[in-house]
Length: 333
Image (cartoon, rainbow, N blue to C red):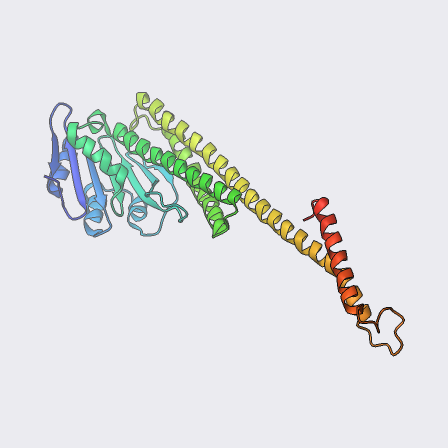
């Protein structure tokens, strides 16, 4: 059965033994004292009391790391070396929702010689997948805590790739809408995608740096040399993600330029039609204003004749038609 101690669940496995779920803090202390491989997962969204007991009492982690793990305010990604353990803050992406601010979940990880402790607020999909895998056959925990850390980080980074692919598909749809002349909230959605790309970039740069440290023999007591190359593979993925994000930013700039170009061309077409119409009516207005002047002695014929008004109207209509045909022939209309 699943272990539920408030906010804590613990999984342990011996090198050749079966996977075990621990059901008490005493069992956790005993497994830790025996040096068994274990994974303690803390969900602090409901209650932080047990999390404090585990982090402060059982593992005796540094108070600053415990504060970072339990504080509700988001912390930037980082890796701190505390000798007997290393402390990592990594950000997991939630499910993708088009044209909504990107949201992340902060994941705190403690890597020790025989344990991995994860702390988060609310369920993390990537962790659940790794947890179920460990329940099935004990892998990757059976290989060592650094391999479990690798599995978790690898899954989190893969989610970044899926997220960026979804953003690119949304951007393709926006470009098609821009070319088709649709304007409903198009500018807002383009700017939303651009802002999300900037947020992802601010996350990937420090996370890339911490994976660079894990991919080198900086922590030989906690990360065995044969595991470094596997962390380097995740680092390469993050480098690729950073390039994709830069490309996505350029594509959003291109979509914005396309949108503004379409709007500008449409405005030019409208202005061209209005200018042509104003030009046509300008001489007609001149003629009507001249014939409408209140002179006592009119010198313009034929004011006193019966056919004067129809003649002037016909001349004005003919002049307007000739100018319209001229503009049409020059493709100004």
